[in-house]
Image (tube, rainbow, N blue to C red):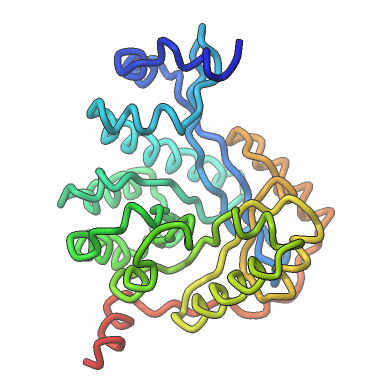
Length: 287
């Protein structure tokens, strides 16, 4: 059965049933710091495994959830499940930053920061170990998002702008919103070893991130050549199949052990210092 065929029958009713019946699960893709070789984070990626239809891609069921009014329930489940998994890792000796992807719909709720904070508090997760990723297109209405994102950042939660360079008004977003990291889109990273233009764009984004006090993160790293190129360009953090494929939560413990054995930690070159959102924005306005 093809992936296209799998989508037939994957409607709103089936998705609601999936949420109730635990057909949704999270897999985690590791992120590694180039300066120290350490595992510094993971990205939680939602998966829907229907008992009859098989794997249904998030590119189908996330838009479906938004249109069917299910995105808030799914987002709350993702935040809580990721927090539960973090607590389980922490108890086993693995403490790292965990990132979840959020829809622009969720940010329209004024109580969203309190919802996230309450979930993390219940799971005993330090907000400094939690990150929310937003696609560039989700941040178009910067004025309306400023209060919500600032409240999240003031709680200590990290904010990342995802797929950077593929949307519009990017520089305006960075100037107005309190992001702590920029994720360079895989379309640039994947072609960096054979495109001078892509290398120039990547170098420019890395410089931009550092000058704004942010981390530069590259996604879609699939070869050692690309990894070394990003290291030479001064990128902070990388993720992609060359580092590790997404995997179920319990498997991250084995990944961490194996990674540390194959890639001994190097002396830290010093983390990017990120000013509190309130101070950074005041400084930009000249206050």
